[in-house]
Length: 599
Image 1: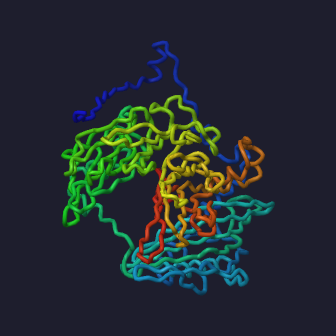
Image 2: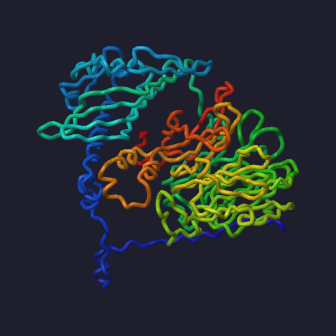
Image 3: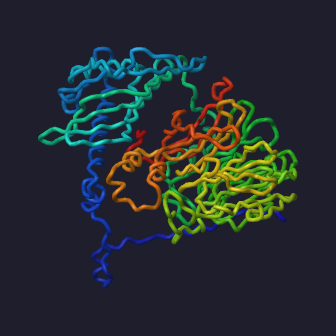
């Protein structure tokens, strides 16, 4: 096959905005928006459809955010500081609490880089009473966060139980501050009791009990320092492309080019030119060139995208470096809608030659590789999301928590010479294969010498395909790892060092989902698509499954305290402190718009 470069012609349309008066004169009907602002406000008001608990949640969280603001003020003001606001507007005169900080902290981990301590606050002794006591308790907590600058502090309310005169809530509390080159972070759960004033108004705090209190400190410096600008900042593409916010492109690149406001492409790392240094590939949104940054000896990276012939403008959802022809250098596989591209490495980090195009995978996402048939070369597994590249008219996931109407994942068998064959059905991987898949990972879970496959799906059940000599069987249900949730990542490791492989699955934690699905009103109003517990599971967050003796897995997610990873796009086991135990790193977040500090 001759060398191929991929281009796209972009046609920019200029749309004229026609005033309503002009439409009337032309005889055309005036377009009425679906929602007027006042109607929209009603539509999103929880009181409008009887969700009083959600209305109370909004009020309570707003009050807790005021507390977080006071905490930052007091921490910055020193030992004599007091909250500047009206404490009586948040705290009931009958307020009582055993305090916000444990009297003693016990070391859970101490190392040269950081330390972790935890403790509990006894609920038996309510030493802090009234507004004055609340202020003293807040000062004590602020003392743990005193530093060179005000701490970042916030709450996220995830549970509510309403009564006739008041209600109780559970909220995650997180605060962090830097001091003297070091860093301290506090994580806790606040159990709060609220009273509703007889004459109306905002709820008032009656009691606070603190659970799961934990402090992490780095006495000399933060664990990680952002060196991106130092490493790649000298490249024009860093300023002109990587630092630009999504809005910079939304107004300039059409959707037809494949640009989307959310980007989950990630990065790929490999030594592309054989100099012993790892290089970085950044797949990009449609309309923007992919970027390949090649490392220099001093630790900086030069943009070699054009020279490597990877800077085409098709949307790339994922990139995978993998040696597909066994010549010792990493080739590049791109999930580039509406096809998967296999680019051969010329041995010096150039990828001008496209050796294979799988054009029948219209909506590919993540990529993974393994030698599933033990024939000596690596095969490719492609996760597909929707059934078509054109999103118009594509069915929504039904039912939401157990969908099986998504795209078709594909196993591409490597037959050598960059020849790939769709072996999905023949290998048994077309079973339960329409589940809006976002990630897949290989691991030999049964020790029989061939790699098995776990697939994380966005709307419901995941797959665990056991490989029996090149033929796969979905055993996720019997193994206990279907994990009904919004699966977005998979990572394997022996985290407890018992000789069996364990799996961590990144999902979505939803505070609103945790609140709402446990309310009686939800059970009455919801459409019965399955057991309530399965719907509630969708909001719990990430999952850790430990390999069990005799096969199968045990759900250790809650016991190991690893569920709250926020909106977890990606996750990986990594021994970050070199102590021989696998830690977890979770990449999370979303477009927060006006709430950039949301937990």
